[in-house]
Amino acid sequence: MDQHGRTIDYLRISITDRCNERCLYCMPEGYKGWAQKADHLTAREVVQVAEAAVNLGFRKFRLTGGEPTIRADLPEIARGISELSGVDALALSTNATRLTKLAGTLREAGISSLNISLDALDPELYRKVTGSDVAGVLAGIDAAREVGFDRIKLNCVLMRGVNESEIWPLIRFASERDLPIRFIELMPLSNADVLNADNFLSIEEVIVRLQETDEVIPQESAGLGWGPARYYDLKKTGATVGFIGAMTTSDFCASCNKIRLTADGKIRPCLGRHNELDLLPALRRGEGVEDVLREAIALKPLDHEFSECYQPDRPMTAIGG
Ligand code: SAM
Ligand code: SF4
Image (tube, rainbow, N blue to C red; front, side):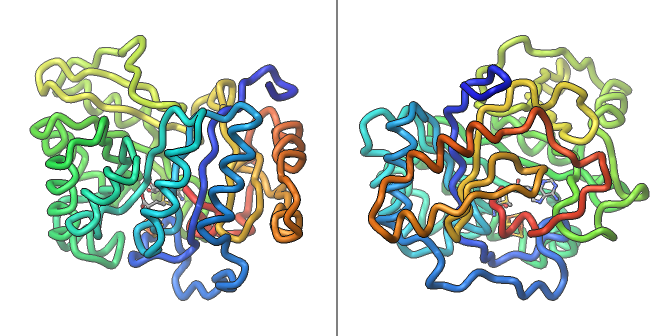
């Protein structure tokens, strides 16, 4: 329990700050601030931190990045964590570009569910947002569906004037495949010109737009994840749509249950505040890291400070989504 009465049992582990895509909102153009390879936690070290977290009562884990599938030892990391006694679930966040090759191996390594980023279906627009090719991503989604993960969710970051036109096509795409899709408000985690008043699109505005075409019915308990998303059923379309409104939801942080581990061994108590604790020295001295994790939980703030002219000290790709 943290000092605000929240149970913290979810660790999001970034295993790399690098990525094979270049999403506008995640990686500033020309970004060169990569962590030194030597500072990246090894597979064994990542599992050691997860084990320390399990000892403190953490039960839910997510591997993320950057793009976690670019690390060749991802299956080894996944296996190491999923086999720890006390781990209830291990999820992966990915851009799906490598799932045609990896989906089966990752399932076998114990990954139970996937969150897949998909900001557009239109190839030109997808390339504009991510710098990459949507065909490979769609093939990756198909491959993942065939493997039989417990759950696959799609994630789309909302950008006014960029991918607004993709909202309905994405909802239909998700619904046809029986996948929930979540729309995420853009957070200030790249550079200032990416998040500005012109391209911010609130979840409330999207919900109102959906209501013009369909009946949007709140789901009381969707049981679709561990995070702050709120889910709705679209009656006519048959889709399940989630919304993550970190910027506009007043009680967004009230049920926060997580801390983050960066690829270079920093524990981040809150995505939307700069504070980080370094656990790499203790880890490399061969000491337990439970105390650092306990301190991070104790330091969890009541809420983020995104609305207070927050300037990112590291972009999302370096923190871990
Ligand atoms: N590469 C993987 C992916 O794209 O899913 C995992 C890492 S990515 C940083 C995790 C999530 O963070 C993605 O859903 C991405 O869309 C989201 N994200 C990144 N930057 C963001 C921002 N500035 N605002 C909102 N969501 C963001
Ligand atoms: Fe890479 Fe994911 Fe960031 Fe896009 S959102 S640049 S895929 S880490």
